[in-house]
Each structure stands twice: as structure tokens, then as C-alpha cells.
Image 1 (tube, rainbow, N blue to C red):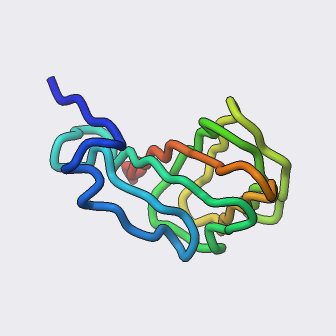
Image 2: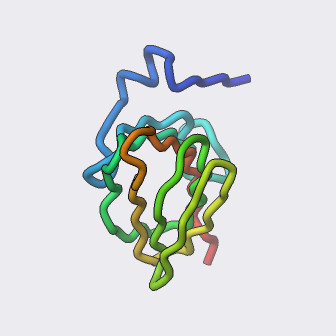
Length: 115
């Protein structure tokens, strides 16, 4: 059994800036996973943004805390705690924490598509 927590020392040592905005860390990667690429946790400070980018895999962003504005492809929608957002492979996407007072926390799960 593998148990990981964002606050664990080994996870915190891998902290990085995700696409210019979020403090992120990988919880699990393809070193441990068999059918998925990774699972990460990210915190986006008030009024910060994960810049628009494209990934070569599909993702799900799950909002753990806060609210914001999510861009996927040509669609922009308000998102909040409890929302799961599917991002198809190759679609441009970005996330803005538009709350001036509260941090936005997300869980990101990614998987390669078998072609």
C-alpha cells in the first residue's frame, strides 16, 4: 500500500510551480501507477492563474477548496469546490483563482490515452 499526503516531507521536497501559477506537488506518478500518468495536488493563491497550456494527455481537475474560472478549449466556466473538470488531450486549458481572499486547491489526475 502506498499512502501519500501533500504535507509529507517527500512530497513537499518535490514542490514546483505549475504553469506559472500554482504551488504543486506530485502525490503519485507512473513510477507507482499502472494505468494512470500522475495524481497531483496544487494550491493557487488568490488572484493567481495557471497559465493557458496544452498537455499531451487527458486530465481531470477536481476542485477541493475555493472557486475560480476554468478555460477548456473555447469554453470558460465558473468552477467551485466539488466540481470535476474533464480536459481532453490536446485542449488548451487554464485556471484563474478569481477570489481575492481564498486559496483555490485542486487535485489533478492525468492519464495517457491508448491509441
